[in-house]
Structure formats: structure tokens, C-alpha cells
Amino acid sequence: MKEITRINHVGLRVKNLDVTRSFYEKLGFLFLVGPVGPEPVAIMEHPSGININFILNANTNSNENILMDTPEKHTGYTHIALEVSNSISAAKQINDLGIVITEKVEYGGAKLFFIRDPDGNVIEFNQPAKEHAKKSLS
Image (tube, rainbow, N blue to C red; front, side, top):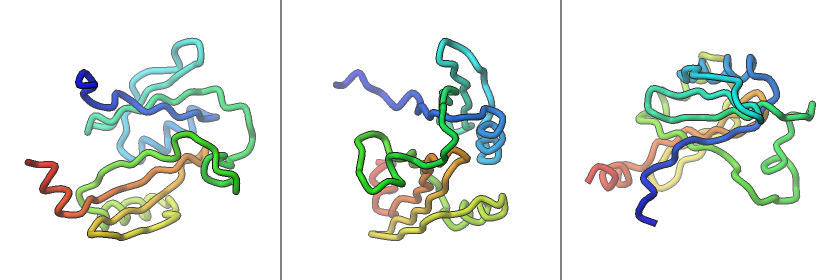
């Protein structure tokens, strides 16, 4: 469908707006509005244009991520991947914030690492291989 131009936002279900807001502000996201609407939803946006809608109706005390932490593999979105220009610098900043990096991966020139937000949602930081970056610019 040629009318699609970009991802507008990502929706994440969370338990506590104050905790979530504080965490994502550390990553550079700015609070825009919320809670609003019947769900309710709060919206934060990064200066790069990445927009996240936090759905504030999680009703469990568990931080288990059913898509990632259980042996049975359920369908659904498993993580958000944020592209970074320098994974080493980004990882250092994450460490300086006291956020645990749960996994690091390198393959084909790409460098990735993963963290979890306070609700167990997975966030990937992805520095693409130089070949991929060159293709993206052309």
C-alpha cells in the first residue's frame, strides 16, 4: 500500500505512568499529554520523532513479558528497535543511567543491545551495518 509513509507511533501497555515517564525521560523522550481517552493513554515523543503511546491499563503485578519470558511463543510485537548512530556511546549512556543491558549482539557489521523498561517491555538499540546505512542514504 503506497499510502503508508511511516510508523506513526508504538503502543505499550504499562502499569504506572510516573515510573514509565521517568524511565523514558532518561532516554530523551518528552512528555506530551496524558492520561487522555477511554483507555487511558499518555503520549511521549523523542526529538528524533519517535512517538510512544503508553496505555495505562495494565492490571497485573507481574513484570513477566508473556511474549518474551515464557517458554510458549505467543504471537505479537516483541520489541521496539531504536536506531542509534553509535552503539558504544549509547551503551555507555545506558550504563551511566544504571539501566541493565540484558543482551549484546553483533552480526554482519550491525551492533545491537537490549534493555527492559520498568514493565519488562524490550527495547533494542540498533546500529546498522555500514552497508545498510549507505543504502538508507541513497
